[in-house]
Image (cartoon, rainbow, N blue to C red; front, side, top):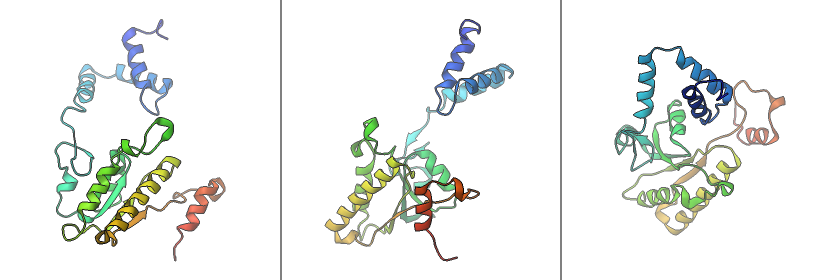
Length: 212
């Protein structure tokens, strides 16, 4: 392809193909789509990419990406400070916000994955535990830690590890015993067919059943 196409076109296709979920065909379509746009649109697109990380910060409290620290969520007095949802990445915060959740967050920055060389020390687990310790009465008011990592093997392992570490804290500090550790429910998606669901998904759907 590099011999047929101009170098600038081939180079942009290669860069698009590095993005997650974008294969060579999609990368080519995106590149040729941009070729149909006016120079002003391409300049605007390029500038947006250049400015992407320019003014971004990491929130000192929840570790979400933000323009200022603490972020707008952590500064909002209307948010329920007794709830802290633990998520893997900032994109998870965006997804959860659509549900109307009104608590706070703690972004881990990934999951435990021995294959990729990522251990607990590479995530923001120690910061979470420190946050919980500081929340002990009378300074706190923290009631629930919601573990919202993905239902993957790595996500489950991370949730189990965090739950175990929090339980250790609770056993060492009686003031923390009232803090509840919960895990988001997992099961069948809306519109899904039972016949196509795997055994683990069906088992968890049964475990999470409630009165109708």
